[in-house]
Length: 211
Image 1 (cartoon, one colour):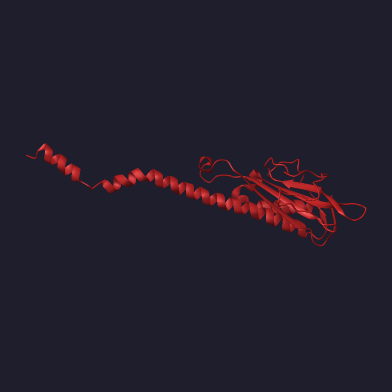
Image 2 (cartoon, one colour; image 1 turned 45 degrees about the vertical axis):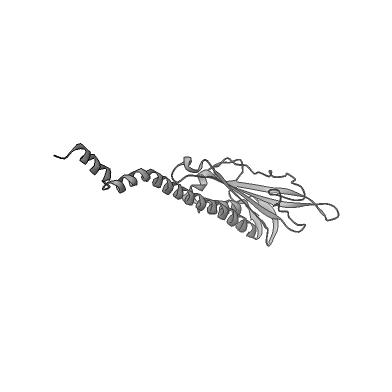
């Protein structure tokens, strides 16, 4: 007859299910790390995408030659924003394009910077951080402190603000609610007139739509 003490001794030295038990205990931690890693990668991708949208928009709008129309700006913004459909940008993002011109005194000196016009696309309810058309911004120009851009006497600057309400891959609880932002500014090139003409569809900043 096997005594009770013998049975307990054998059970105490039995390691046959130890690895499985350890795996079962560590599985929730491992799964949590994997999910957090996937969310972090998705967040990094979205951040890069938002930066690309700002850069591409400012480059394309500033390159429009001779003159610029409503249709030119609308087509550019919607085309670039549409390229970010994989992150749901149109429904959760906003592109704001401002044309910044110099204010010149009678002696030909630049004394201020003014937003000539401003156009927007995207459903996110986000307005420009720096002002609306007709607003004087000061001689330093437009942008955050220490990173302002200004137009010279014979030029104009296109300034782009992009905002995107981050859409999580797994769950908002992993990283919390985030709004990604990017800025870009560039001098206008080879354009004889910077007043926007009425040809084409207007992308008014009072409209918040994904289409």
